[in-house]
Amino acid sequence: MKAMKNIDLQKLNQDIEHFVSEREWDQFHSVKNLSMALSVESSELLEIFQWMSEEDSNHIKNNSQVMGKIEDEVADIFVYLLRIISKTDIDLEQVVRNKMRKNAQKYPVEKSRGNSKKYNEL
Amino acid sequence: MKAMKNIDLQKLNQDIEHFVSEREWDQFHSVKNLSMALSVESSELLEIFQWMSEEDSNHIKNNSQVMGKIEDEVADIFVYLLRIISKTDIDLEQVVRNKMRKNAQKYPVEKSRGNSKKYNEL
Amino acid sequence: MKAMKNIDLQKLNQDIEHFVSEREWDQFHSVKNLSMALSVESSELLEIFQWMSEEDSNHIKNNSQVMGKIEDEVADIFVYLLRIISKTDIDLEQVVRNKMRKNAQKYPVEKSRGNSKKYNEL
Amino acid sequence: MKAMKNIDLQKLNQDIEHFVSEREWDQFHSVKNLSMALSVESSELLEIFQWMSEEDSNHIKNNSQVMGKIEDEVADIFVYLLRIISKTDIDLEQVVRNKMRKNAQKYPVEKSRGNSKKYNEL
Image 1: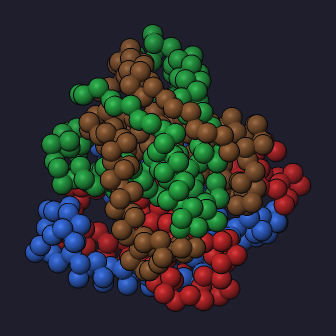
Image 2 (image 1 turned 45 degrees about the vertical axis):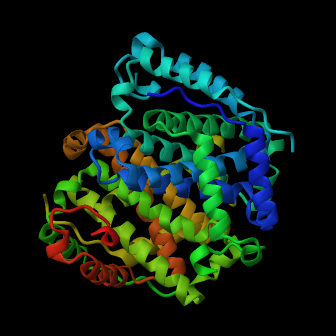
């Protein structure tokens, strides 16, 4: 696994907003509609794996044809996530840090090791 | 709208991988399963808006109680997206840039201005 | 609104099972995979409405072109739902009746009238 | 596998409409919103299987605790599907029969036997 590259989120978001604004698409981008679009794109990613074994999914990075589709769906998902974040003034890193703290409490290492149960069933 | 804050993606991803590895959860994280989890979290965000008007969704950032739920779901979505990216060596910024170039061709400004139709119906 | 037509569920399910068996597709139809396919098809229905106003969605039955797409997605959703029911021996009418009884208790008429809140927020 | 029981769809739908009307919930039930609710419930079913192996999912009918959850989600999915059908005057059996005819052409037995590829990749 390679180290993950950083991104210039501020610049990327500005470019997305320019793209949307040029096309006058903001009128369609209510937060409600964006949550629908994000869910639709996540399902398009899901569709790629619906008949695939877990094992095969774990080697998918060697299949350049399927990776092209995965990359496109990942891009769509992230773009809609950024649209929502932008419209609700969410600080992405901070909300992930907060959620990780909550999860660390809901899933203490000792109780959840090797266990996929939900916290309320542990 | 405030400017979007940058994130240290590499450090954030390392911390997530540490969280997962401490709990020995990687055995559950096939790319197939992660695509399911991402879709499930996207639907939990969708659920917040299912009976809400578009208008109300556009003012949601003033509702701190609902924002707390939205932030948690956005965090979950982004964490699973990072898990998938990490396992498939995707360069997030690059795939978004590539997709935006494709979209710029599929949706030329003149034809798509103020129009929510799909490119194959334009 | 017209009265809803009854269906011969047993015969329909037999025909679907014949279709699947002829193609030797049962090997792909684990309940897990079927739950993915059902979710994917539900999202394809969702996609039709993602940029549409609620008002327009309520008049959609007059738009024969879009209705053709909706009918195809509704069919796909119901077929996968039947596959899951068939594999888990669920009695569809009974589980709906049971759920309606639970919902009648969670959502008493007086408290929930004209209110879209979840039962735990009433 | 037991034979699938038939349902009195017309009566069931009338009872659902009575339930909704008593609570004055029809104002929330635009077709757009119902497509969101259907997708959300499908994801709640999906969530049950997200960390489960395909093998375990195929034996789930022996697990009465999980079956209770599955039955509730299946009920919710079917109720929202009926709401959509009712509002769009869809004849459920007919649209499934039509879709099966289309699928029989897109997936000829010889080409698709034992093959999970999409018709446009066969």
